Image (cartoon, rainbow, N blue to C red):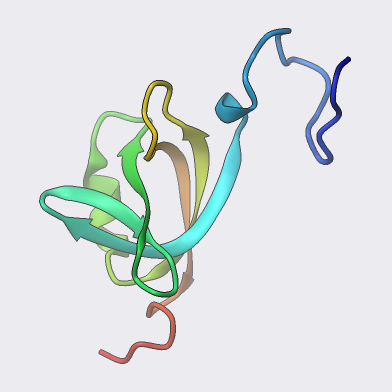
Length: 99
């Protein structure tokens, strides 16, 4: 029996594709930890490690310390890595923190 997911287009999705590969967005605080860019929640707990879908992760540097919305997909074979296709800044600071 096939399940319907609200908000997901039915066209263009090959049969048998897992929902984990479906494009989605996450919101949180951009940070860099141990040389890797990560997205943190409001309590500064890691949501996901970030990898840019393009050629360089340098795009993330200008968003460190800012609240952002990222778009992309969960990376195959990885529990906590998100392949990012777009970044939109939501706020200059994360969760009300002052600089």
